[in-house]
Image (spheres, rainbow, N blue to C red):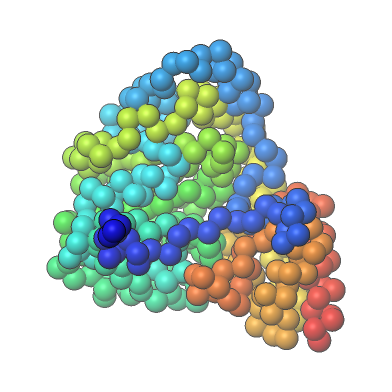
Length: 364
Protein backbone atom coordinates (compact mmCIF):
# COMPACT_ATOMS: atom_id res chain seq x y z
CA UNK A 1 0.00 0.00 0.00
CA UNK A 2 1.10 3.55 -0.71
CA UNK A 3 0.59 6.05 2.10
CA UNK A 4 -0.62 9.60 1.37
CA UNK A 5 2.34 11.76 0.39
CA UNK A 6 2.80 15.11 2.14
CA UNK A 7 3.58 18.15 0.07
CA UNK A 8 7.29 18.52 -0.61
CA UNK A 9 7.47 21.89 1.10
CA UNK A 10 5.99 20.43 4.31
CA UNK A 11 8.84 17.93 4.50
CA UNK A 12 11.24 20.85 4.27
CA UNK A 13 10.04 22.26 7.61
CA UNK A 14 12.24 21.84 10.67
CA UNK A 15 9.74 21.51 13.56
CA UNK A 16 9.78 24.21 16.22
CA UNK A 17 11.79 23.21 19.28
CA UNK A 18 10.49 24.73 22.55
CA UNK A 19 12.69 25.67 25.48
CA UNK A 20 13.44 22.90 27.96
CA UNK A 21 11.84 22.78 31.39
CA UNK A 22 13.69 19.71 32.66
CA UNK A 23 17.25 18.42 32.63
CA UNK A 24 18.42 15.40 30.63
CA UNK A 25 17.84 13.20 33.68
CA UNK A 26 14.33 14.55 34.23
CA UNK A 27 15.06 17.03 37.03
CA UNK A 28 12.83 20.09 37.12
CA UNK A 29 14.96 23.19 36.59
CA UNK A 30 14.50 26.96 36.62
CA UNK A 31 13.20 27.73 33.15
CA UNK A 32 15.16 30.62 31.66
CA UNK A 33 14.67 29.27 28.16
CA UNK A 34 11.26 30.58 27.04
CA UNK A 35 11.18 34.26 28.07
CA UNK A 36 8.33 33.85 30.53
CA UNK A 37 7.55 36.42 33.22
CA UNK A 38 9.42 35.58 36.46
CA UNK A 39 6.60 37.19 38.48
CA UNK A 40 4.02 34.76 37.14
CA UNK A 41 0.52 36.03 36.29
CA UNK A 42 -1.33 39.13 37.55
CA UNK A 43 -3.72 38.15 40.35
CA UNK A 44 -6.75 39.77 38.63
CA UNK A 45 -6.08 37.54 35.62
CA UNK A 46 -5.93 34.46 37.84
CA UNK A 47 -9.23 35.41 39.47
CA UNK A 48 -10.92 36.00 36.11
CA UNK A 49 -9.67 32.63 34.88
CA UNK A 50 -11.04 30.87 37.96
CA UNK A 51 -14.43 32.54 37.55
CA UNK A 52 -14.63 31.36 33.95
CA UNK A 53 -14.49 27.76 35.17
CA UNK A 54 -18.20 28.01 35.95
CA UNK A 55 -18.95 28.16 32.21
CA UNK A 56 -16.78 25.48 30.65
CA UNK A 57 -19.75 23.95 28.84
CA UNK A 58 -20.02 27.07 26.65
CA UNK A 59 -18.11 27.78 23.48
CA UNK A 60 -16.00 30.94 23.71
CA UNK A 61 -17.10 34.03 21.82
CA UNK A 62 -15.80 33.40 18.31
CA UNK A 63 -15.73 37.14 17.62
CA UNK A 64 -13.79 37.92 20.83
CA UNK A 65 -15.95 41.03 21.23
CA UNK A 66 -14.98 41.77 24.84
CA UNK A 67 -11.28 41.22 24.20
CA UNK A 68 -11.27 43.41 21.11
CA UNK A 69 -13.09 46.14 23.04
CA UNK A 70 -10.54 45.94 25.86
CA UNK A 71 -7.62 46.07 23.42
CA UNK A 72 -9.17 49.00 21.58
CA UNK A 73 -9.58 50.96 24.81
CA UNK A 74 -6.13 50.09 26.13
CA UNK A 75 -4.10 50.77 22.99
CA UNK A 76 -6.28 53.35 21.25
CA UNK A 77 -6.97 51.18 18.21
CA UNK A 78 -10.15 50.31 16.33
CA UNK A 79 -11.77 47.08 17.47
CA UNK A 80 -12.91 46.20 13.95
CA UNK A 81 -9.30 46.26 12.77
CA UNK A 82 -8.14 43.58 15.19
CA UNK A 83 -7.60 39.89 14.61
CA UNK A 84 -6.75 37.33 17.26
CA UNK A 85 -5.39 33.83 17.46
CA UNK A 86 -3.70 31.10 19.47
CA UNK A 87 -0.77 33.25 20.44
CA UNK A 88 0.76 35.71 18.00
CA UNK A 89 2.19 32.59 16.31
CA UNK A 90 -1.19 31.85 14.77
CA UNK A 91 -1.55 35.43 13.58
CA UNK A 92 1.82 35.12 11.84
CA UNK A 93 0.63 31.90 10.19
CA UNK A 94 -2.61 33.59 9.15
CA UNK A 95 -0.63 36.35 7.46
CA UNK A 96 1.45 33.86 5.49
CA UNK A 97 -1.58 31.76 4.60
CA UNK A 98 -3.56 34.76 3.41
CA UNK A 99 -0.95 36.58 1.36
CA UNK A 100 1.60 34.01 0.14
CA UNK A 101 1.80 30.63 -1.52
CA UNK A 102 3.86 28.52 -3.96
CA UNK A 103 6.08 30.69 -6.14
CA UNK A 104 6.05 33.59 -3.66
CA UNK A 105 8.85 34.77 -1.38
CA UNK A 106 8.81 35.83 2.28
CA UNK A 107 11.77 37.69 3.78
CA UNK A 108 13.08 37.43 7.31
CA UNK A 109 16.43 38.12 8.97
CA UNK A 110 19.04 35.41 9.53
CA UNK A 111 18.65 35.38 13.31
CA UNK A 112 14.89 35.77 13.41
CA UNK A 113 12.01 34.00 15.14
CA UNK A 114 11.90 30.34 14.07
CA UNK A 115 8.17 30.50 13.31
CA UNK A 116 8.78 32.78 10.29
CA UNK A 117 10.39 30.04 8.25
CA UNK A 118 7.83 27.48 9.41
CA UNK A 119 4.94 29.77 8.42
CA UNK A 120 6.60 30.43 5.06
CA UNK A 121 7.24 26.81 4.17
CA UNK A 122 3.84 25.71 5.44
CA UNK A 123 2.13 27.60 2.60
CA UNK A 124 4.67 26.53 -0.02
CA UNK A 125 6.36 29.91 -0.26
CA UNK A 126 10.13 30.36 -0.38
CA UNK A 127 11.96 31.81 2.64
CA UNK A 128 14.50 34.50 1.77
CA UNK A 129 16.94 34.89 4.63
CA UNK A 130 18.89 38.16 4.73
CA UNK A 131 22.12 38.85 6.65
CA UNK A 132 22.16 40.77 9.90
CA UNK A 133 24.29 43.68 11.06
CA UNK A 134 26.06 42.43 14.20
CA UNK A 135 22.98 40.35 15.13
CA UNK A 136 20.60 43.24 14.47
CA UNK A 137 18.08 43.78 11.66
CA UNK A 138 19.71 45.30 8.57
CA UNK A 139 17.10 47.42 6.77
CA UNK A 140 19.28 47.83 3.67
CA UNK A 141 19.78 44.06 3.39
CA UNK A 142 16.02 43.52 3.55
CA UNK A 143 15.28 46.11 0.89
CA UNK A 144 18.00 44.69 -1.36
CA UNK A 145 16.35 41.24 -1.17
CA UNK A 146 12.92 42.41 -2.35
CA UNK A 147 11.87 41.08 -5.76
CA UNK A 148 8.64 40.92 -7.73
CA UNK A 149 7.99 37.62 -5.92
CA UNK A 150 8.16 39.16 -2.44
CA UNK A 151 4.82 39.08 -0.61
CA UNK A 152 5.72 39.49 3.07
CA UNK A 153 8.56 40.82 5.21
CA UNK A 154 8.68 39.55 8.81
CA UNK A 155 10.48 41.80 11.31
CA UNK A 156 10.46 41.25 15.07
CA UNK A 157 11.09 44.37 17.12
CA UNK A 158 12.67 43.76 19.59
CA UNK A 159 14.06 40.77 17.72
CA UNK A 160 13.95 37.22 19.00
CA UNK A 161 16.40 35.56 19.71
CA UNK A 162 18.90 38.45 19.63
CA UNK A 163 17.00 41.11 21.63
CA UNK A 164 18.15 43.80 19.21
CA UNK A 165 15.94 46.76 18.36
CA UNK A 166 15.18 48.84 15.28
CA UNK A 167 14.34 52.50 15.88
CA UNK A 168 11.20 54.25 14.72
CA UNK A 169 13.17 55.92 11.93
CA UNK A 170 14.55 52.56 10.75
CA UNK A 171 11.10 50.97 10.68
CA UNK A 172 9.72 53.97 8.79
CA UNK A 173 12.59 53.76 6.29
CA UNK A 174 11.99 50.05 5.80
CA UNK A 175 8.30 50.59 5.16
CA UNK A 176 8.93 53.49 2.80
CA UNK A 177 11.28 51.32 0.73
CA UNK A 178 8.81 48.45 0.28
CA UNK A 179 6.34 48.21 -2.61
CA UNK A 180 2.74 48.75 -1.51
CA UNK A 181 2.03 45.17 -2.57
CA UNK A 182 4.37 43.77 0.11
CA UNK A 183 2.97 43.18 3.60
CA UNK A 184 5.28 44.35 6.40
CA UNK A 185 4.61 42.27 9.52
CA UNK A 186 5.97 43.89 12.69
CA UNK A 187 6.13 41.22 15.38
CA UNK A 188 6.01 43.14 18.66
CA UNK A 189 5.86 40.25 21.13
CA UNK A 190 8.27 42.06 23.47
CA UNK A 191 7.18 45.65 22.90
CA UNK A 192 5.79 46.11 26.42
CA UNK A 193 9.34 45.78 27.73
CA UNK A 194 10.37 48.93 25.86
CA UNK A 195 10.51 52.30 27.54
CA UNK A 196 7.93 54.75 26.11
CA UNK A 197 10.57 56.71 24.21
CA UNK A 198 11.56 53.54 22.33
CA UNK A 199 8.18 53.06 20.65
CA UNK A 200 8.89 52.09 17.04
CA UNK A 201 5.69 53.64 15.70
CA UNK A 202 4.31 50.32 14.53
CA UNK A 203 0.71 50.81 15.62
CA UNK A 204 0.52 54.25 14.04
CA UNK A 205 2.07 52.90 10.85
CA UNK A 206 -0.52 50.10 10.77
CA UNK A 207 -3.25 52.68 11.32
CA UNK A 208 -2.23 54.83 8.35
CA UNK A 209 -0.67 52.36 5.90
CA UNK A 210 -2.51 49.70 3.92
CA UNK A 211 0.32 47.16 4.02
CA UNK A 212 1.40 46.91 7.69
CA UNK A 213 0.34 44.29 10.24
CA UNK A 214 1.41 44.56 13.88
CA UNK A 215 1.24 41.41 16.01
CA UNK A 216 1.36 41.18 19.80
CA UNK A 217 0.91 38.60 22.54
CA UNK A 218 -0.18 38.13 26.15
CA UNK A 219 2.48 35.44 26.65
CA UNK A 220 5.34 37.65 27.79
CA UNK A 221 4.95 40.65 30.10
CA UNK A 222 1.31 39.80 30.88
CA UNK A 223 2.30 36.36 32.20
CA UNK A 224 -0.24 34.31 30.23
CA UNK A 225 2.00 32.06 28.14
CA UNK A 226 -0.10 28.95 28.77
CA UNK A 227 -3.30 30.61 27.56
CA UNK A 228 -2.01 31.41 24.04
CA UNK A 229 -3.71 34.74 23.39
CA UNK A 230 -2.30 36.79 20.52
CA UNK A 231 -3.64 39.57 18.35
CA UNK A 232 -2.91 41.70 15.31
CA UNK A 233 -3.80 45.16 14.03
CA UNK A 234 -3.90 46.28 10.41
CA UNK A 235 -6.06 47.90 7.74
CA UNK A 236 -9.62 46.59 7.34
CA UNK A 237 -8.69 44.95 4.03
CA UNK A 238 -5.86 42.94 5.60
CA UNK A 239 -7.87 41.94 8.66
CA UNK A 240 -10.98 40.96 6.71
CA UNK A 241 -8.91 38.73 4.42
CA UNK A 242 -7.15 37.02 7.33
CA UNK A 243 -10.45 36.36 9.12
CA UNK A 244 -11.48 34.11 6.23
CA UNK A 245 -9.00 31.43 7.29
CA UNK A 246 -8.99 32.02 11.07
CA UNK A 247 -10.11 29.17 13.29
CA UNK A 248 -13.49 30.10 14.82
CA UNK A 249 -12.56 29.41 18.45
CA UNK A 250 -8.95 30.48 18.98
CA UNK A 251 -8.78 30.34 22.78
CA UNK A 252 -10.92 29.47 25.79
CA UNK A 253 -13.31 31.68 27.72
CA UNK A 254 -10.88 31.56 30.63
CA UNK A 255 -8.02 32.73 28.44
CA UNK A 256 -10.04 35.66 27.11
CA UNK A 257 -11.21 36.67 30.59
CA UNK A 258 -7.67 36.46 31.97
CA UNK A 259 -6.28 38.53 29.10
CA UNK A 260 -8.84 41.29 29.64
CA UNK A 261 -8.07 41.37 33.37
CA UNK A 262 -4.31 41.40 32.74
CA UNK A 263 -4.65 44.50 30.57
CA UNK A 264 -6.08 46.34 33.55
CA UNK A 265 -3.23 45.57 35.96
CA UNK A 266 -0.87 48.42 35.07
CA UNK A 267 1.08 47.96 38.30
CA UNK A 268 2.05 44.39 37.42
CA UNK A 269 3.21 45.43 33.97
CA UNK A 270 5.28 48.33 35.27
CA UNK A 271 6.83 46.19 37.99
CA UNK A 272 7.75 43.60 35.38
CA UNK A 273 9.21 46.22 33.04
CA UNK A 274 11.23 47.94 35.78
CA UNK A 275 12.62 44.67 37.13
CA UNK A 276 13.55 43.56 33.64
CA UNK A 277 15.29 46.84 32.82
CA UNK A 278 17.35 46.74 36.04
CA UNK A 279 18.43 43.12 35.92
CA UNK A 280 18.91 42.95 32.17
CA UNK A 281 21.36 45.83 32.50
CA UNK A 282 23.11 44.26 35.47
CA UNK A 283 23.32 40.87 33.80
CA UNK A 284 24.69 42.30 30.56
CA UNK A 285 27.39 44.21 32.45
CA UNK A 286 28.40 41.07 34.37
CA UNK A 287 28.56 39.01 31.18
CA UNK A 288 30.67 41.61 29.36
CA UNK A 289 33.15 41.55 32.25
CA UNK A 290 33.79 37.81 31.84
CA UNK A 291 36.63 36.73 29.52
CA UNK A 292 35.44 35.57 26.11
CA UNK A 293 31.77 36.42 26.72
CA UNK A 294 29.72 39.19 25.12
CA UNK A 295 26.13 40.26 25.71
CA UNK A 296 24.28 41.45 22.60
CA UNK A 297 22.53 44.73 23.54
CA UNK A 298 18.92 43.78 24.29
CA UNK A 299 15.60 45.62 24.61
CA UNK A 300 13.65 42.44 25.39
CA UNK A 301 13.32 40.27 28.51
CA UNK A 302 16.29 38.12 27.60
CA UNK A 303 19.94 38.49 26.64
CA UNK A 304 21.79 36.66 23.89
CA UNK A 305 25.19 35.74 25.32
CA UNK A 306 27.96 35.11 22.80
CA UNK A 307 30.80 32.73 23.70
CA UNK A 308 33.84 33.94 21.80
CA UNK A 309 36.63 32.58 24.00
CA UNK A 310 37.68 29.26 25.51
CA UNK A 311 34.33 28.50 27.13
CA UNK A 312 31.84 27.23 24.56
CA UNK A 313 28.11 27.87 24.57
CA UNK A 314 27.47 24.12 24.70
CA UNK A 315 29.64 23.66 27.78
CA UNK A 316 28.03 26.66 29.47
CA UNK A 317 24.58 25.30 28.61
CA UNK A 318 25.43 21.97 30.23
CA UNK A 319 26.97 23.60 33.30
CA UNK A 320 23.93 25.80 33.83
CA UNK A 321 21.62 22.81 33.39
CA UNK A 322 23.61 20.89 36.00
CA UNK A 323 23.25 23.89 38.31
CA UNK A 324 19.48 23.83 37.79
CA UNK A 325 18.97 26.39 35.01
CA UNK A 326 17.54 25.72 31.56
CA UNK A 327 18.69 28.24 28.96
CA UNK A 328 18.25 28.27 25.18
CA UNK A 329 21.16 26.95 23.14
CA UNK A 330 20.44 27.63 19.47
CA UNK A 331 22.63 25.63 17.07
CA UNK A 332 19.50 24.89 15.02
CA UNK A 333 19.12 28.61 14.34
CA UNK A 334 22.72 29.12 13.31
CA UNK A 335 23.83 30.24 16.77
CA UNK A 336 25.96 27.40 18.19
CA UNK A 337 28.15 30.07 19.81
CA UNK A 338 25.32 31.61 21.85
CA UNK A 339 22.85 31.10 24.67
CA UNK A 340 19.61 33.05 24.98
CA UNK A 341 18.98 33.60 28.67
CA UNK A 342 15.69 34.93 30.04
CA UNK A 343 15.86 37.59 32.76
CA UNK A 344 14.59 35.87 35.89
CA UNK A 345 14.51 36.91 39.52
CA UNK A 346 17.42 38.69 41.19
CA UNK A 347 18.53 35.48 42.89
CA UNK A 348 18.36 33.53 39.64
CA UNK A 349 20.40 36.06 37.69
CA UNK A 350 23.06 36.27 40.40
CA UNK A 351 23.31 32.50 40.44
CA UNK A 352 23.58 32.27 36.64
CA UNK A 353 26.42 34.79 36.66
CA UNK A 354 28.17 32.82 39.40
CA UNK A 355 28.00 29.67 37.28
CA UNK A 356 29.30 31.49 34.18
CA UNK A 357 32.12 33.05 36.20
CA UNK A 358 33.17 29.69 37.55
CA UNK A 359 33.04 28.08 34.11
CA UNK A 360 35.07 30.81 32.41
CA UNK A 361 37.66 30.48 35.16
CA UNK A 362 37.76 26.71 34.69
CA UNK A 363 38.03 27.03 30.88
CA UNK A 364 40.82 29.61 31.12
